[in-house]
Image (cartoon, rainbow, N blue to C red; front, side, top):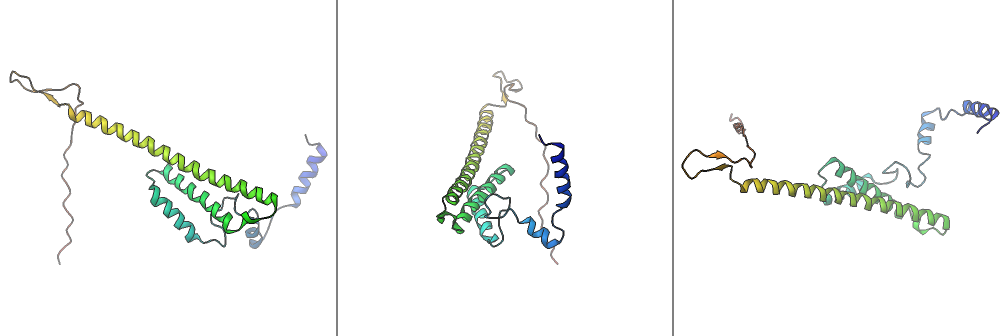
Length: 184
């Protein structure tokens, strides 16, 4: 617990530290956390090619073809994790002789790799669940199609609805007229 004197001294010191005032100082200050680009929120750092990141994202998008917003997020997470791994190798962080630096590199690289595979596994899990749900729906529809909608009595009376098949009502809407360009 801080003493009253410490709290007062902290408040006085805080008044002197108000941060950058000029636009240049604010811009420089906003980049303080970008030392190596492995822990920040920035995806493409200054000096990196945004088109290269877009190519990576497009390749993953094409491969996985996300169908839902959640799947889109997971594919983007995979691209971000892979981009961080590529950044480490581009900057040569794996070639350090400093043991502490090498340990950090290995930790960051393992974190990025885990993030990639975690997103990939979650994407696969979601797809499998959706495939199971679709298969169950198809099975239900197929079962309904195999049962007759009406029962025809042998004695020639009117057909009666089959109670085990839900009634299907359709509304017929005419198709819109085809669009034909005006001939002038």
